[in-house]
Amino acid sequence: MPCSATALIDAINDANANGGDTLVLASGCTYDLTAADNDENGLPVITTPITIVGSNTTIARNASATDQFRIFEVGDGGRLSLQRLTIRGGDTTGEGGGILTSTGGNLRLADVTVTENTSAADGGGAKITEDATATIANSTFSNNDAGDEGGGLSNDGTTTLGTTTLNNNNADNYGGGLDSDDETLTASRTTIRNNETGEGSAGVDSDGGTVTISNSNISDNTTIGTFAAGIYNDADSMTLNTTIVRDNTSTGDGSEGGGIYNTSPLTLRNSTVTGNSLPGANGQGGGIYSDDGPVSLISSRVTGNNATGAGGIYNDSAPLSLISSRVTGNNATIAPGGLYTDVPITFTSSAITGNIPTNCTGSPVIPPGCNN
Image (tube, rainbow, N blue to C red; front, top):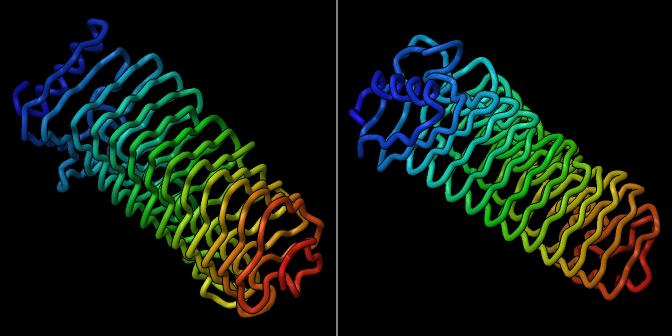
């Protein structure tokens, strides 16, 4: 296809009119969109199965464009597959700065970079709405910005991520890297790193639905708010398998949960929460802060986290199980350094050792076997 935005628009219109098509873009080309084609979309809404294949190819909103528009919208019944492309510079007052997948739409990304897109609402890079689906592989969401939630990606539908990176994204409120609500998120071999928020949950924010994260890394995310620099969990259920939550920071005074703030069922298997910190005054739960929601740690470690109180785990009246797990090497200004809990916990074949200033002394309830 010629290196022409007009040619691309015409080809999508033809594909929609004729039941779908595969469009091969010019190698090394930037398809430069200078005005909206419709509503807040730079290109025609996708309503049929369309595959767009690039090679070092970019589709971008021109920086001098006066219209605010995203790049793509996938409409009801549309199936959009993007391969080997960069989606750049979308800017919308609605959802999905780069890509919006509306109810009934299906999105597939393979080797795609979504970058420098802005939404005044949710999903700076992309938004997957309720009853929409997305499969994203070998792709990157970077330097996107959301005025509300999901700086990199916002999911209200069913989304699968594989070997994908969300880095250097920002949300004014929650989910600097990733926000997932209501339906299903499955992520494997995913890196969520160096994202920021102004309120909380700089890495991952989840409110409702089922979340499973495996063989992934959630690290170096920062919020100037007061909770959940790494993960905020209010999902119906969240499971972390062989996943690292590392070096996340909540800088506000009175922060809770540097690595994870939990209010709903959470299971960690073969996972590590390490190096997370609450440098402000009166922070609680440098590694994990659990409030009401049941937490199970199975063959997992909470180590090297820092806070004013309970550098490792702060458990506020929630069911907590430590099974073949370790809480070690955490630091707090006020005892205990390892585990604080105000209710009895399940403690099986586990260890709480080497924490500063104490392991459990200072906690209202001290688990049997905690070495102080």
